[in-house]
Length: 549
Image (cartoon, rainbow, N blue to C red; front, side):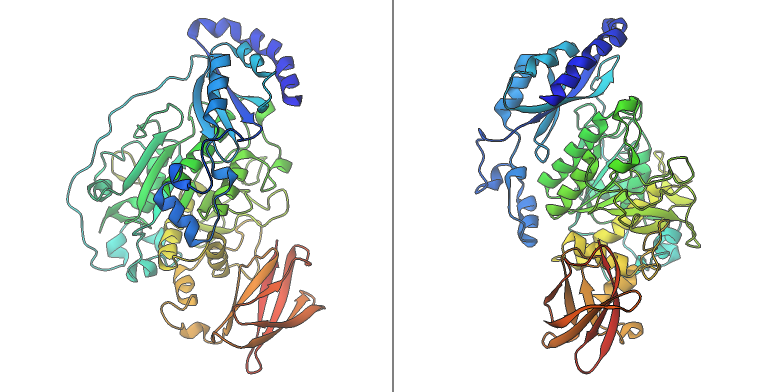
């Protein structure tokens, strides 16, 4: 096995650099990937044994069949690994069919070489003092809730500028504030969330659905860092006339996957485990302001070519989540004015909505990670206000912070509200809608992608609120856009035949035909790029820019 050869060669190096630390009971983390799930005791016909009713219902909504990736990792395989190595189980991944084990003696991993059901092994972390659990109390906030009186600057106060920049208050005015949606936040730590008054309603209304610390294997997440706290506040904080987030009535799951004390590859495994737990719980949306490119061990660091949207573990995890019906929002990262410059992973993921940062004037922040991804896919997808945003710090006080870390939850929360209004729309369809109403959609670029979305326009475009007078001339709508293999055509009428023609941006005709309203046009013969789709129902004509990826 190729990977075991590399482990054997690396072992001499490991022993040289770590003997001096053995007195401190060091631990080594290894990712063990299995070859199959053949001995599983679970079946695809009874997913209730390993998925929550909410997760099963989400799949049913989007007609997503349960497949082998949903099956848990075979417990007997994990038991064998632990028995042979004497290790401790850290986490497991259904989608990658793997687990991470902690060993005090790194040589013990070599005992796995002769086991047939193991595909490969990779060292993903080293902890000189071991990886210890950190227990801590969890508490509940208290205090009265407040009923909104008006959706204006007085109601949102400090949070107004970041919400109003993309007309997010319009969704709240229509009654969509995230009710019924479950948002999983994957971050570093959530200090003060259990004590700050702005989260009182979150606890009083039992909308904190789950917490887990994937570093220390405990439910305690209300410590370690204020980063996750500030991220969460952009969505969940709720004290009218002081601070109101973008999805203040959604339910939340808080997952700590990133160790602020080091940068090691195991954090990507923790991220994968967190997203899979969110899937099992039935989350509708996962948002993360984490991003990876370099690690303490240079051998684990990513090169830009790996950020092609489908290679890194975080990117594969994000894509898998979207296939399971989960919307994924990921930050572009803050490397724009560093030598790296590019977006980070999972912001490169094909299916994620990657969020960049702009200021109040919609000028891109120099620090915001730049696209495209290594495969040439437009990234970021959209942008939110990430310059001098207002957040709630662990002490419960309004403060300012900047970065894509805060632009991302602003957009993610409003996306959850939009999803609430469109419960049968799949994640990529929602993403296409948001992109199509962004201010740079006609001329996207690598700094802002499609630009800042207008959530009022997104809501009106769907026809839920009637016809927007500014858009009465738009007879047709298409989705998804960007498209891959096909694009569906919607019209003001539910019936009728539409004649279409596809041309390149220079006007050269590439194909034509006709399609029924609600039908699809095959686009699999088109290479990635921008095209013009001419639509004509005999009475009215329209030209729509079509993006192929």
